[in-house]
Image 1 (cartoon, rainbow, N blue to C red):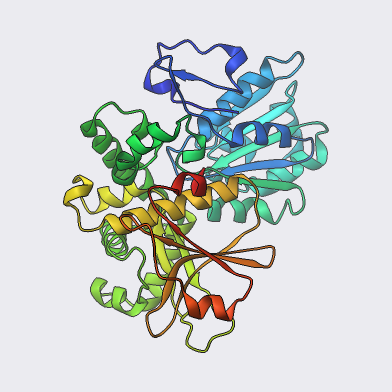
Image 2: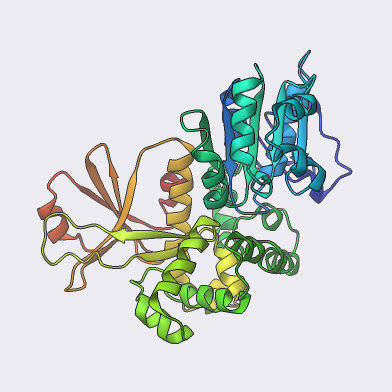
Length: 406
């Protein structure tokens, strides 16, 4: 169930028998992708499987690995097409069953990469599912908002979605010592596949610049026919300095010389494109609990740091606490999402400035977590624990974080 960057070194020979288990880089590095086997076992006739995630996180490679495995089995053929190919888009958007049947003749599987590029893709997939027996469909897209809107309604009850993030610590074949040795790099340069396999910091910075300029912004701009890339960058930079803090839509709007609704709209789009995610305040029992505006975080520390052009070592930075909190929360979400756990997530704060960085609600129970880079202890949040009697609280630091995220 694994994926690795063959494109980083195309000369490496990939043994077919390892395609669903492991692919080697430089013969000793393995990067597993947790979703690969899970997706393959979910592929069923009359069902559409969707894989969403930011560009350069490995969606296409996962599709290629699954395709190779399927085609190694007798009698199975996969039609793998790109949604941005005009000829492909013309056929798939035709909504003519005779054309679609000819297109898929002799194939058992249809894989569509960047499926959101195909007009009327949801209607066409519904026709295929309803009219062509035993066809198994796997699509990918860089924007959950765009593709799910196009696919979701026509295929209600017949689609399953997965989300791919930058590489999770739980996907890395690292023991405790190796993970500790690489922690500084994860906090500074993040976990995009090409960044993890880069050999030098210069190469890591160049890769992140390429991802920022050539991929992430493209998705945001294309999603809603937007044009102002400078505005998006300025908004992201403002958010980058406010990790772990309550944001003010009005303050952001004032700094960017736009109205509040514009800021809220762009932030929503940035979440749908897997650049940001948000946590809202938890409030149930106490009048003094604050829950008006969310806190925003980046899915990847490297993207956050390229936006503010800061790759300084941790010992001379004044934002290590922000990097640590962002990293731990993002990694925790990857872990719980990949494992299929049903978890609601919040932060907790009162108007008298008592707070907990992360609250997880699972099976009716509350667990609170505070993230400390240097300290190993934090004062217990008495108000929270008194108000929610069955809740638990823990401090996540450099000594215990691996159990928390992997």
